[in-house]
Image (tube, rainbow, N blue to C red; front, side, top):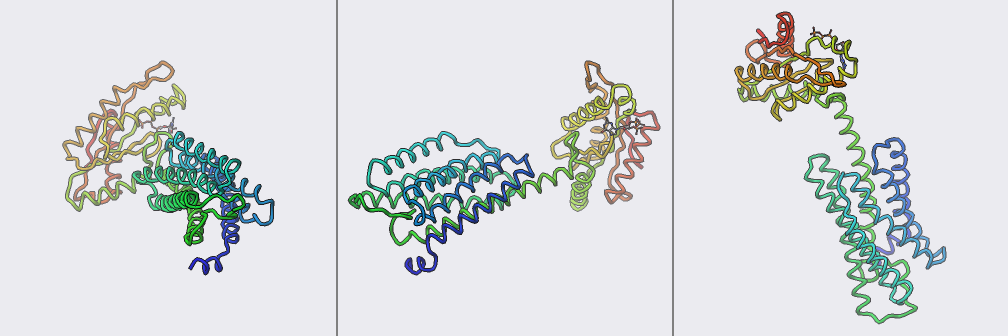
Length: 401
Ligand SMILES: Nc1nc2c(ncn2[C@@H]2O[C@H](COP(=O)(O)OP(=O)(O)OP(=O)(O)O)[C@@H](O)[C@H]2O)c(=O)[nH]1
């Protein structure tokens, strides 16, 4: 089986192909890093896959260049890539990097590697040294991705990272066990030199090497997908949220409120819609400046978040207009909430350059029913009620007809 596999996949060809793919992936990541400087993990990932790719390429060229130097350098490059990987992942997933555990594994691996290289003739110990580092780095990364899986964003891609990390970690563990076993059961032979043997002996070597190499390529693709997905989520967030207040914008509100209204109508539950407008907002801008106006808008948005429940849908509809969808709220409760918001706005008095700014709001309240079945008709009704509140002298709530 192994000899057939060895015949089919020459070890050097595998290392060279995977090395080239990883270098290509790192070039793609470097380009993405230049285009998107906000993604702080991309330069690190670029380095990780460049180091891994160059290490593998060098490994595949062992016959051609001075062998000992090639072995030392390729192991150093791959080891450095493995040490950097948890740092890149920690930045990517906004998690603390397990620096101490990684530092201990690096120290253990480096000491064993130095001992294997310069003091003992047991060359298999080198495999053990690289395996210690690999096992620790890949399993620490897997642990971080697993913790990230509890967050709802991009679970598919996270699994795409978790599987290769676990498999490569296990393969390194097998390498560690095999080389340890080999050192224990074989007397040292100074001239014995396993050459390209990453996993020193046994029939498992070639399949494990192949699976490990494919997993590292899969990991590179998962990282690229993960970044693309994060970018997509960010764009989606920007399209549906207001940059000044952080609340939903009109698009986000209409999408979410349409779904909520349909669910309430299906289950015959009461709900309500409030349309609010800050009174004489133009005067605030004119008297205190545009920046003060922005500050007032931000303070009022914070007030809405404070005063309303978590599952109430709050949005800045545009300019100084705000909208709230109140789920599972009776008409009487909606009236009380609207009045409470009016009173709270009066109390707010946001301070700008030590000057308190007086604020009031007008509110139009609309309830779904016979005449208002769709979100659009509810919004129109609430808007009319809001204008009625303005006409009646502002700082009040008017119920839509
Ligand atoms: N600072 C600031 N002002 C804004 C923003 N968006 C809209 N505005 C201003 O809000 C003001 C709205 O003015 P109007 O529509 O005349 O309404 P108003 O002065 O609040 O008067 P009433 O609604 O009738 O009580 C305009 O001066 C807009 O320039 C914003 O993002 N920041």
